[in-house]
Length: 63
Image (cartoon, rainbow, N blue to C red; front, side, top):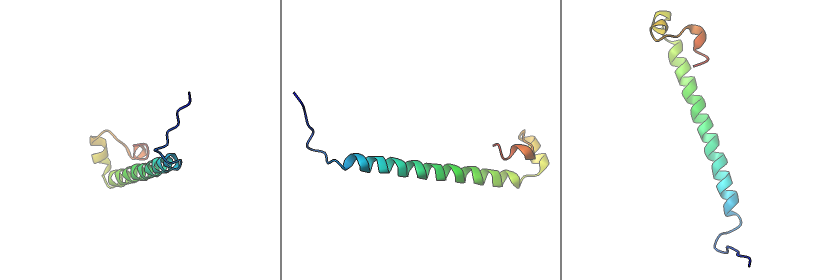
């Protein structure tokens, strides 16, 4: 016996996928901006300050 769900529209799955893609895109932009802000803040520190936290200028990009 087959069971069909009739209470849900066919487009609901497409909307859910679009929301997931949109949420992933927003998450990626937020993560990129966090990394950018962190790199800029670390770039403003002196070499002595970077050494105090165990970093060098070359490490800033990888953080």
